[in-house]
Image (cartoon, rainbow, N blue to C red):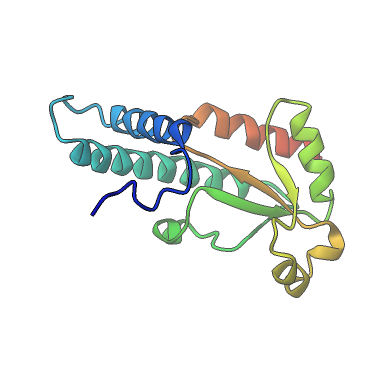
Amino acid sequence: MNPGKWMTGTQNHEGIAGTSAAIDYLASLSGANPLTSKRNQLEQAFNKIEAHEKTLSLAFLDGIKKLDGIEIVGLNDLSTINQRVATFSLTSKKVPAEIMAKQLALKDIFAYSGNFYAKTLMETLGYEEKGGVLRIGFVHYNDLNQVEVILHELKTILS
């Protein structure tokens, strides 16, 4: 089989280089010996990422429950942490999602509002006519201090 036989044009060299760099970056997060196989490095890295995001999620869930006037859409119990990712949809009866997102943006906190291409779901849940939900997500390069900052800013916005 000739891999170039069905090539309809020039290969996507930028995509190949970017994918290779992304794999190297992710593997570096493992902290493993560089002589360890790339597969094992990636597996260790993803395990570390998952554990870190769970830590951030637990802190966020714990803190958000202490704020009056905000609701998490979806799994919000600490016991369900293994069934969710570190992306949260929030609503408030006090402040519309779009206003919360704009207020957070003024503090250099990037959160978004809307339906996130799930218009039918938002309509069914009754959030579409309210402007959707506020979405906040945490990833491997966020830290607990940033979670606390977001919680503080949300508390300020809601007061």
